[in-house]
Image (cartoon, one colour):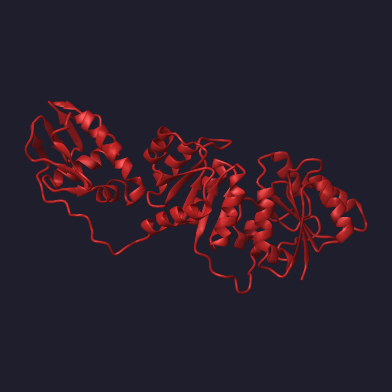
Length: 378
């Protein structure tokens, strides 16, 4: 068993570290800044110090230099942990002979594996060598318990603390990202769900949602926000979100709503939506003309300016003219996934199409079910 001191000024990251390392045999200490960390190093003589670069009172570089200048502490291994965008700090870290540079955000299992690798000496360079990026350091944790999937938490507020607790308690693997940029860089981890804050330090959550949807139209996105007005909820759903959870939230409901979206996004052997019927390339319905090959719709000879999703809706309905199509089937066809909580998006989409095509009598509602494109009408 080793004693490891983590110097980290973000309380939520500190809690995530403690919860992640709880599954190891190591003794873990936490210091909220470099000055406190230096005092704890002198008192406990840990086997490894992992320090954030950017901290108040004394940053990670200053802590490193203080330890190396003290003969009693100079041999204690040090690794840097950072999400810092300050080039001067990163450059300074790279010139120090540290075990490794670990980067935020991280998942609990990733942190455990990296710490084991560092303790085993996998990241140690020869004297005078630069610190090795953690991407070059790999380790293995024996009997790592399975998780229910990775959850990407893009949140800079205090509610992240509770979300991390709840997710770990349900055996999920949370990755906490404090900025939009960090979150978008973690999409490649294939999360089973994304929890997204409305207001982030670098970009609005709505923009992040749209960017994610441009790359992945299936992963569930749930906004978790203090906004409780109808307009914000509608904007979030229209941007591609599956659900909108209002802070402060009830823990049991929070987990239940998230897992409902995860289940809906999972592949299911459900009855497929009706296949489009074979049709001609050009279909005419009164004053509305739909050219499927050219992907153009005209109203009384004037091209309608339809967005991609709007045209997919019209295309799907006219190819099944006279057939009632459910909101869930439309979601699956237009957006690539089905979600009961997101069927409001289809209602808004239909309203826009009706307005642009002047098609109130042509595109009719089927109460409690969905919509139908009428073969006959004005």
